[in-house]
Amino acid sequence: MDFENLGAQTHAPPSCAHAIQNENIIHLDHLTKIFPSKTKVVKAVDDISFDVKKGEIFGLLGPNGAGKSTLIRILTTLLTPTSGTACVDTFDIIKDPEQIRGIIGVCPQNGTLDTELSAYDNLEFYGKLENVDDAILEDRIWELLEMTGLSDRAMVPVQTFSGGMRRKLEIVRAFIHKPLILFLDEPTIGLDPESRREVWQQIAHLNAAETTIILTTHYMDEAERLCQRIAFVDRGRLIALDTMENLRKLIPAGDLLEIGVEKIDERVVSKIKEHPLVNSVNVLEQRVTISVTNGSQVLPAILAVFDEYSLPILSISIHSPSLEDVFIYLTGKKLDSGTENAPAPGTRGRRGL
Ligand SMILES: Nc1ncnc2c1ncn2[C@@H]1O[C@H](COP(=O)(O)OP(=O)(O)O)[C@@H](O)[C@H]1O
Ligand SMILES: [Mg+2]
Image (cartoon, rainbow, N blue to C red):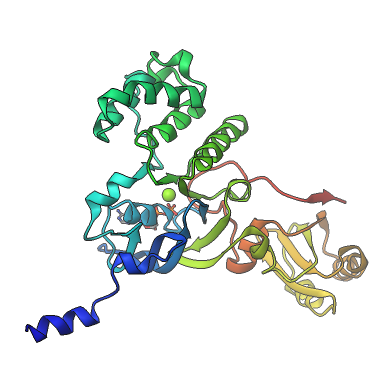
């Protein structure tokens, strides 16, 4: 008997067949990706572990540069991790990339449609690439075009399509071989509100077909609208992971008072912190966000502090915590902070005073 090999097998990490527990379809185990460069080393993904459940829409939510696309590229076998492992279904991202590619569909962050080709031709080309049986390919293409409402533009070059139409086409294209898992990287980036809603409907529709969907976004309204569970990521790290309802509970109970000021005065901030009904005070740019147990009860006392130090108030609002508030509470930064210009995420449960 080869005792040396036997020893090695005993200490080897569990295979994906073991790592994937019954209700899960993706398993990440201490995944790390480092991009070395001459000037600085970037830890794009920093020791991330979690599981994705079969059939769920799972959101990776974080600002630009958080590491979302890198994580998607690792899970879709386009990049290898620096360390750590991951399983997609029962397959290992390093050992079984071919098998994984057969069961996933990917819609990358940057458009990859051939804009000179028609919608039909784009789907046909991709279908052949994914080895969809010729006998069913044509029906499948029309089915997908129907789903997107683009049947009447099937033979028109994609360059005449709006951003929303292109995105919808790209998403169903990733679905042409009926994958078990769909990866959508920033599916609605840069789209107008109407197109975003249409894309959301499309995603919900594909999920209804029992496809597991992993999407990345830096729009909190998108994550709130679509995802059963959300992972907050920031600077490559997993900050929190839960249902939206549970993530909201991370902020101490109560209301959020948001006070806009021209400049911050630290004396005001520390005085407010002393109030017994104030749970926390967060300062971001020219906005003081105060978590309080009872907003209307505490407001007069807080206004009195601003008055005492003659600090003019530009705006006041009181609202219940949104996902973005939770993100700010945990990381001290906004979701849309980053290098790219993006429309501001929607706000929730807000009432002006
Ligand atoms: N190929 C690469 N080479 C070097 N750095 C990279 C590369 N890809 C991504 N990065 C860096 O890794 C970090 C995470 O990027 P990315 O995964 O694209 O974030 P996100 O998708 O959340 O905006 C950023 O700092 C980015 O500049
Ligand atoms: Mg990205």
